Amino acid sequence: MYLKNIESYGYDQVYEKSAQLYTIQPHDILYIRILSSNREIADLYNNLPTKGISTTMSSEADQYVNGFSVNKDGAIHLPVLGPLKVIDLNLQEIYELIQAKANEYLIDATVIVRLLNYKVTVLGEVKRPGVYFNYNDQLTVMEAIGRAADVTEFGNKENVLVIRPTKEGTTTFELDLTDINVLTKQGYYLMPNDIVYIKPAKNKAFRINLPGWHLLLSSVTTLIVLLQYFDK
Image (tube, rainbow, N blue to C red; front, side):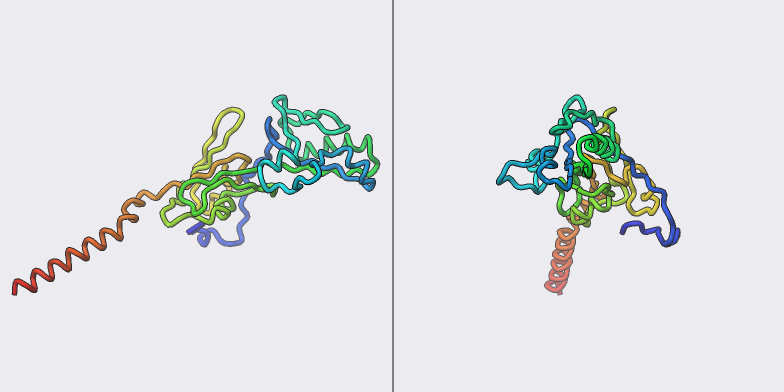
């Protein structure tokens, strides 16, 4: 059960949001489109895919076709606008930077900026472990677990591990998803490239073998009854 103590706190409480703004790092991939009423001129400013190649972002390969990769120096290279330093900027700051540049060339420019490689990995005791891409501005641990089809009956919801790579190293967070206060904890809101690991319950081995023990005890009981019957 998730958030099992919510009734003791009340359903109409406001919990402080612990989400952090993600800042762009080398090797990130950005979706950038510059729109204008003059389609032909606007196309000059965009990294448009080759004819016949899908424009959807359904795979990592599509991202490289449709996106701008941040190089090791933290810059992207846009057609016409040239190289722009985006490292350590968040998406809003990058939008403002590109919008200002586009306004120098276009009267009615509209800029769209998205992070394409916002993915999280969900491992351990979930029904569908794997890598999940996110195209919203944020993602919570519970949403990620929901995409992985929920925790299995052998999963431990009281000690969920979030592993986060950072520039300084790797940071870990332990979350209790049965406690309503998890909504305010660092790590509840996921960042790109986070790993969510659902640990197995301590009694997993016993629970897995429980049917076998039931069968063994049933067989022993039946044998005892038969022996008593034939001894009469």
